[in-house]
Image (cartoon, rainbow, N blue to C red; front, top):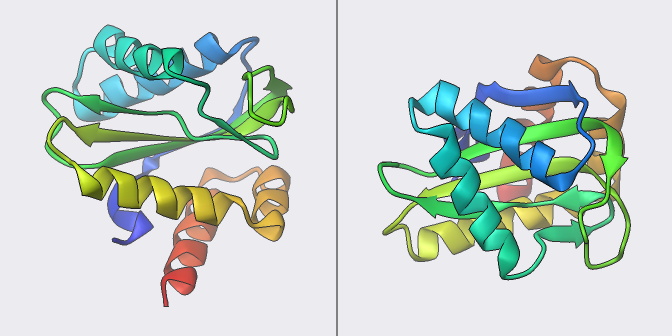
Length: 154
């Protein structure tokens, strides 16, 4: 699975200013609603329900929130870089500034798990995280994420 199939250019959100995890998830829900014509409240609720099971803050300033959504016909990703890191209750207690949300159809099954694993592996790379934090241009962020993911797939 190519990251380019999960992530569209208009799903790259850079320099987002929020004060909390919930606000970050709201920005993601709004972007999903806008791009996929879904209800932002339902998207937010699905993400918050997943967070109740345990924080999706995976450490190193990275979070990978995810949820299954009714009405979604394919996997969909949103990448967001926060202006200022926020407390995300991450496993290493570090605040989060890089967020890659992954939304899946309700019946995605193992495809959802493979996509989560791919995104997590990708964002564990220190050089990639540093580059994502240094780039201001959403087009450059998109190119970096998709190129890096595809070169690591080989």
